[in-house]
Image (tube, rainbow, N blue to C red; front, side, top):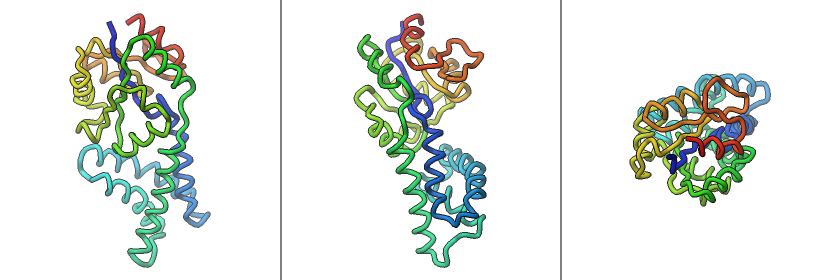
Length: 230
């Protein structure tokens, strides 16, 4: 019987893709207009590799945040004449990006109602999310979801990032349940759902577009009915 629910955060409980898109647009608005399209293309190529390096412990959080914009400026030939000016430009871009993704991410339709339903029916809810801890916790606070969660597990803090099975087993151990008493809900089949199953948890795929995985929900208001059957 399921007693606890682990939620992925980004693109499960909130629209992170939309916030990232707006955030990068705001950051690149600091650049000359002719450079912005190329900067967006470079971002899509550079940022994911840098995040993987951060998750692997190869670079620090601060290095990740600096490099994701500095490397773009360098390739565009847009670094400022002095180190101080370059630092200021990178800082402004990073601040604009982080304000948008952390303070203005929109909750997924039905997220608050889903969390309230699960809580009211006696299930404990938690978050298992990747990313820098300060950003993830800030986003949860700004979304107004903090009171719903008994635990918030962030990859940077627990020392394991999904899809590493250690992220799931660490969360389950700290919750104090057996794996088969916990269900993982996430939008990423490869990053959330399949590794959770491999770690012994139940798992539900959240995909508004649908998928071939079962169990599947396309809207969060379907979650209680699915979890109640596990």
